[in-house]
Length: 261
Image 1 (cartoon, rainbow, N blue to C red):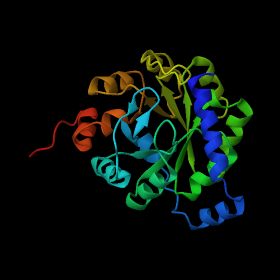
Image 2 (image 1 turned 180 degrees about the vertical axis):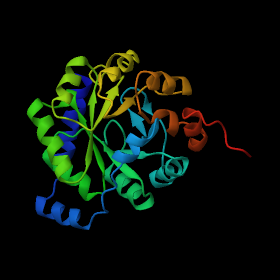
Image 3 (image 1 turned 60 degrees about the vertical axis):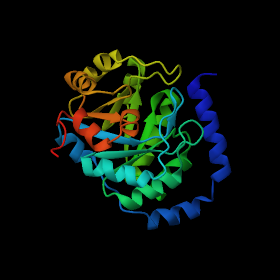
Image 4 (image 1 turned 30 degrees about the horizontal axis):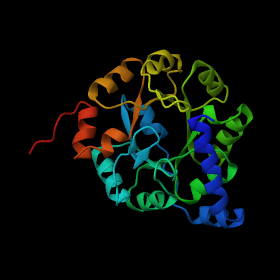
């Protein structure tokens, strides 16, 4: 069993324990915060940051305690994050839907529910908790699922980042006419990172799309490398949550330098 398979198995087990009748979820959607659509903003900027609330990862273990995810998200928003990504997977990433609720109540910018979406229910659940964007991992989904889930997300008013790691996955992603594609330099089946994925795959994406570089972004040099190959956004988690000052870390990634004292 690959790492990805193991994660998905745990996601399904946890989902079975918290699933509630769809009628109740639909009622919650009616009461949810209006969708904040980040697409126009992401398309308008030469480089954007999707800043992540992330306690741990399968490859690195615990990254940060993050007792107050909303306070961290607020720092991200004030520093100029275009989207805030909130991990909701519990076993490997230490996240929860409660984190999503807390962040949604504190910030006005768009929020990505970062999880392994493998069941229709999760999309209704995401919208009920105020998510504006969801992640579709091509490696975790069959082609019919990928298409159906993309249409479901759009039908609920959300956007979807379609994540790829290989040429084959990129071809499959483009078949569903995505608006945002993330190229992950980390192979989710082995957890190995190879930044050459950015150089190989991002240039193949249509210029009309939001083109996101994911994983392995730790410095301004990494951002410049991704941008040189066509990325218009970077998704950053570990570097920001481990930084003493996330605001300064974000400015440095964007090449803005330190704030004046």
